[in-house]
Image (cartoon, rainbow, N blue to C red; front, side, top):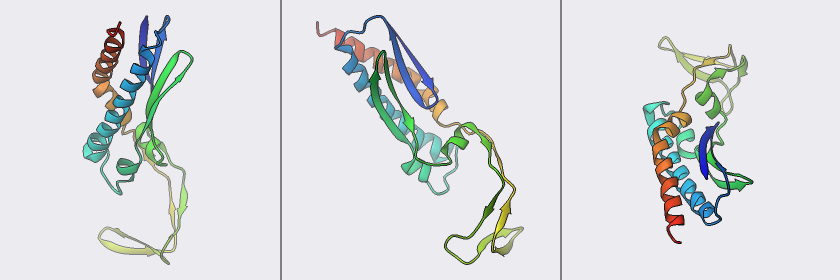
Length: 163
């Protein structure tokens, strides 16, 4: 039996070659679930608390990192980290935003400062931005990968030692 663990996007995927004993699968699911909870915490309180991205609103850190608990399908057990924050992907991978119009939402005019002067405008034509990649999920997995391997090994040992 051989287990291969990979990261594909934000998903941790475990594949195995050979027949996996039935009692090992639940142990691997539990180990993966515990790991994705720890990984989500690591991302939130290490990477998104100033190490990679500086906190602005805190939305991505506070509500945008979601553990995806282990699921089974055929020869796979997978788990991952998801997000419900629109701008999370562009920070992880980088990209370009299109030119767009910015309009006030709750006030009659936009207000910002430029060169120390207050500017008021009814609309702003934003030229678009080139956002560099600031990965926070992939490096977090790399930093904690040894913990995952240890947890999976421990789960397998524990499940197989009950014979």
